[in-house]
Image 1 (cartoon, rainbow, N blue to C red):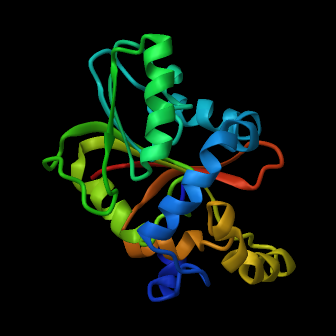
Image 2: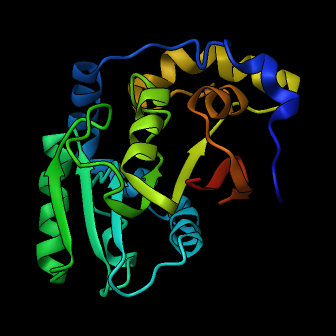
Amino acid sequence: MAVSLREHDHFGAEALSAATVGNAFIDRVYAKLTPFYDIIFGPILQPGRVEAIARMGLKPGDRVLEVGAGTGINAPLYPRECQVTAIDLSSAMLEKARERVTRLGLANVRLLEADAEHLTFADDSFDSVYAPYTISVVPNPVKVALEMKRVCRPGGRIVILNHFRSEHPLMSRIERAISPLTVHVGFKADLVMAAFLEQSGLRPILIEKVNFPRIWSLITCIKE
């Protein structure tokens, strides 16, 4: 569905989440999660990963930046003709990702330890920039989105796959209440989509619900 955010202008100054985290905290959480990540977050979230990469419409030679490589679970899904740079802050996660990439012989994928809020790539470096289940993890989602926009070429695709706070009043209250707890298993449960999009200046061409249950959102944008 096409999306217009004009009706959401009042979300511009809204806090994105009740939970706050820092990079050191995230690194500790994911160091503990690494051995179990593929079991906990693998098959249940895989349909969304497959759909997200399909939405990029990748062509041979395209340059892709993946923000939040995790254990490298997305790496085998990319066409071999594309050049993929995948970054993560967690050294433990990246070690697992490197093992996967080496085992599968994915010569088109390079893995880098990097902070998504401070990307070192030049402006307009990538044809597609993709954040899989990352935006609700980072300390400053808007800063990450702005960096994603900066390094994406004009006309390129910015794809975000993430859980956002429910629009159902009761579920929304529950997610906001539990968000300071869910950060201990790797994500904020109450990230507000409309506020995030408004503050980051992203204008989606498509927003879809993915996975089962369908509580995750796939957001596709084209950089103007």
